[in-house]
Image 1 (cartoon, one colour):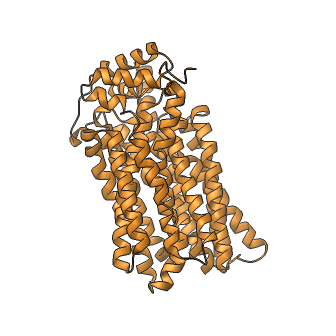
Image 2 (spheres, one colour):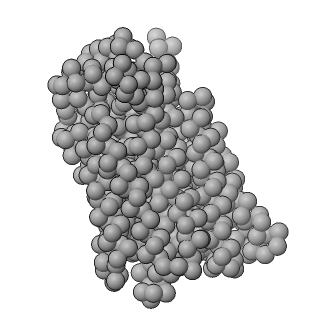
Image 3 (cartoon, rainbow, N blue to C red):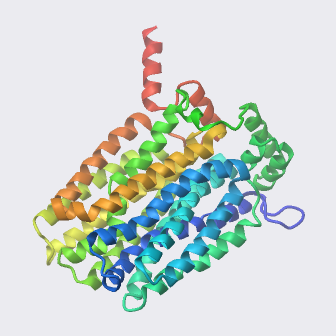
Amino acid sequence: MQNRNRSGRLSGNALTNFIATISATGGLLFGYDTGIISSALLQLREEFHLDTFGAEVVTSAIILGALLGCLGAGSISDRIGRRRTVMIAAALFLVGTVIVAAAQSVAVLIIARLILGLAIGAASQIVPIYIAEISPPERRGRLVVGFQLAVVFGVTFSFITGYLLRDSSWRMMFGIGMLPALILFVGMAFLPNSPRWLALNGQTEEARMVLRRVRVSDEAADRELDEIIENHDVQAPWSELAKPWVRPALMASVGIALLCQFTGINAVMYYAPTIFADAGFGQDSALLTSVAVGVGMVFATVFGGWAVDTWGRRTLLLRLLPGAVVALAVLGTAFAMHLTGGLGAWITVVAVMAYTIFNTGSLSVAIWLVGAEVYPLSCRGKGMSLVAGSHWGADLIISLTTLSLVRILGAGWTFWMFAAVNAFAFWFVLRYVPETKGQSLEELERRLKNGTFAPVDRAAARAEAQAR
């Protein structure tokens, strides 16, 4: 295994690991800045006298910004490159963090979180693509899932920070995000461009140089570059995504993005302390429950990072989603029966943990990986913008409605509804999500072109062949 070239610089797998680690800092910021609001909200409601709607707007401002950021990042990354787009996101993280920590009014707080949202949206769109385009097929799964691992680590760190600083200022909670933002900005300045973006823009020799640095041999790098060139990709407009041959990729990736949110994981993440406090748990107990949720997310994502390259992406989803359905059914029953004391409280906590593990270990692991893999190079940046946009659009709906749903329907019916959506997600994966394990990005593109991409399409093709 080649780790350093003759000049002493990192190369081969060591370099791809380093690139993935620095890039994934964007995921750490993503997770921390979205997760810290669940703890800070308990203080913000008192200091700014926020009602339910006000709390939802402050929470959701970052989601609206993320929606705008991810939709704009696709065209920007196609024009100036993946690496520079990540650096822009890092700069926005820094600016937004400074403003939010110094906010003296609700309006400034909302604007600052909108800026942070722009950074999060851009990072969620471009970091998985950058890692996927620079990784070898056999290691692409775990390296891209490293981004999601950084996200859930950031969420968990935000929950722990929120608990430790529960008697301190919420400004300190937000301000901690400045250090990883600086690391991301400085680190990206020294990393190479995506070789596939370089090849797409006619910079073939530059692409070859990058591939030779990140592959274990020059021969492997040259073979991969030949495969990229053979696909004859050129930069495509947004309308390319509407063409029939791209539609199966759009269906699979956007479907997972929407279901990742509508199955309820961020509803639990954002509002767990509030839901548990309202259900009868003390404030400290509610915050500690959130820490347990975050730890569960980390373990589930570590397991998912192993499973995507061992079991496969599709198999992982199909094996874990039924567990999420059962856990939510139990959770809904516990709240419907008001089991918030004694053994009932433990049943509730275990159900939340089980749901977190099964859902995070499946859909949350798959969303950025599948989105970064399935699109042809010609419209990968724009396609991933739609994936991230669908994710953040659904997240915006969830963050604006969860507390209202709990108030109107009750926590029991709310969780039963999420259980039904998880069951639908299982059916959707069975029909529309292909297995991408171990295949190059160019192989997946060829499957799109020959009509054998989605499981339902392959089944139809087999049936037609047998009928002949």
